[in-house]
Amino acid sequence: MSSPSSNPEAPAARPVTYPLDEFYASAGLALPQLRAIQGDEMPEPYRSLLVHENDMTPTLESFHGGRIHIEVLSRRQENGYYFREVILHMDGSEKPVEFGAIKIDLNLFPESARKLILEERLPLGTILHDCRLVHLSRPTAFLEVLSDEFIDRGFKLEGTHTLYGRRNTLWTPEHKALADIVEILPPENPS
Image (cartoon, rainbow, N blue to C red; front, side):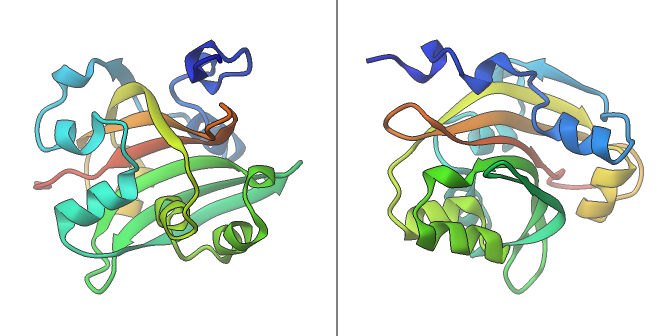
């Protein structure tokens, strides 16, 4: 049995910016300045929040002490794939806790999960958990990102900030890519 990294169709062969690069290109924007880094180069609390093989939704909910919902910034569907850019917010406070760009293969989800995905309320991690969908989370890169105007607007920031994130793929047990994701966290103490 092959591992996800040996899968010939592995999204790991795509750029570390995928699918974020596609959203930026379709909006006519240049990508923010970013570089791939080693997980151990990342300062805390970002290392604990990003350098693991767990889903981000429960990790962020545990760290921030509450449930999360999404705000969709842009979306499109084509050929059974659903693409969206989102800000994850804490329920109640509306504090932004993640910026995400995601490509989801809707064909790999049961109808009940597809319906929840397209309702655009819950993060994918919550849907995977609630629908009891077995999957693997496999980060392929860790990122240091200088925020741009678009990301700043989503995080309600001003100026340029050093942010941290990861490029991740969620896999079925049969090594099919459920989703490709770029996940970027806001600064803990914006100045």
